[in-house]
Length: 266
Image (cartoon, rainbow, N blue to C red; front, side):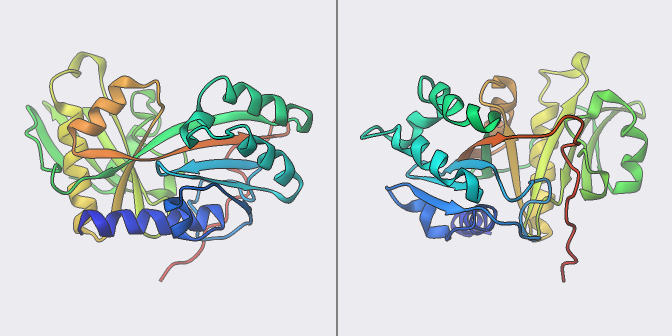
């Protein structure tokens, strides 16, 4: 795949998730859409959204449920003549909280997403033995907290992993979840005593290459404050692509991944 094809696939998926057109993310103006449920959205999303703001660096696409449309529009109006990225930082972030507070809404997720740069992506050397793992080989590690970032909270989504082994012991793991039909998300964990040795980037870049070989687009997500994770993304050949800010309202005791629809894909 070329970088252009990778971006086009990501834009199409974001359009599905946000009930808009791919071109809306490339506009300089902001767009407000009515969020709706679809089985082809990323599988961990709870749709329809209360409100979700997405930007690929130009305008913002805001997608919100019917009863939250006016509040979402008020949030976009906070920008005035300011560039869109200002909505994702204080003091506008605090004002977004204030607008949604009467609706029992709060900012719950803020993240930056990365796509591979085919000109920078290459399999990096690993100082340890590296193996590609299929799902059965990853089963023993779901019960261990050391690899909770690498492995999905929805086990059935995990399709492949890359493991670093020291004397038969797994000390680093990158795994990918089939979050949607065309894109697989990478997560990575390395045991503390093995960090800063290039293992994370070796695992991430190797897994990304394997995902591309299988005709899917790898993507990587990190909290803006997780500097170590962002550095790993860049070192592994990924580049910033889009950001998301999600507001949620969840009744007490409801599990984050309840009521997820799993479609049958050809």
